[in-house]
Image 1 (cartoon, rainbow, N blue to C red):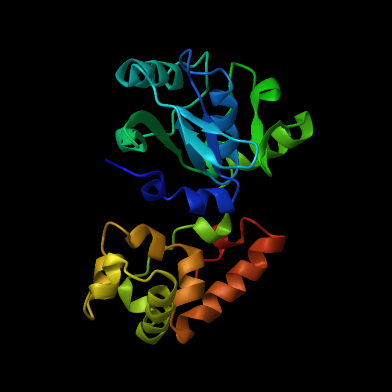
Image 2 (cartoon, helix red, strand yellow):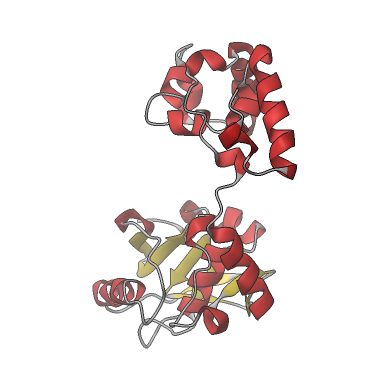
Length: 247
């Protein structure tokens, strides 16, 4: 049996990324506002079968037919008339037994910019929500237009540098990063890795990230950095500079 504390709700409460709903009569319509607002902001956790009291404590009420409600949720999140995109994988939706009662926990990730805006219904201008404090707020047309305008752009810090390999990374910098990582993420499985840490984290599956501009700036060796700084500065004023002036 899982306790409410084991769902790590405190971390979600601190960032106002937690939404509790009774869901006594099925999937509540307001769930989709929470889904879109979490997706458009910083992600969050939605608990069905849980009541939030006025003093911000939680009471487990439970769900009578969790499997049926879970299916209804999946039907909804995959229905383009309900929301425009499903960001979830199977592991993001879990049926949990808490204090002898059954609830559903839905982990909503933050949508990548190319998938925003996430909105309910079929009109982005009337269905795009964002999280602000403890509430879900409808975005203005100007805010939606700004989100949509940015969605199709590949930012410079995510641009791939196809000609580099692992030798472009500075081992000393990675060592410093690993020490800080251990301090912030105590008990993380990566902390037990040996000196091949970088090979585990920066292997071929993750190499796309390491070939991006942002990782080169953070982990790159000194003799390679001049190229990054020169092109990045030029990119700010001339976005097509790199395409015509490779290192």
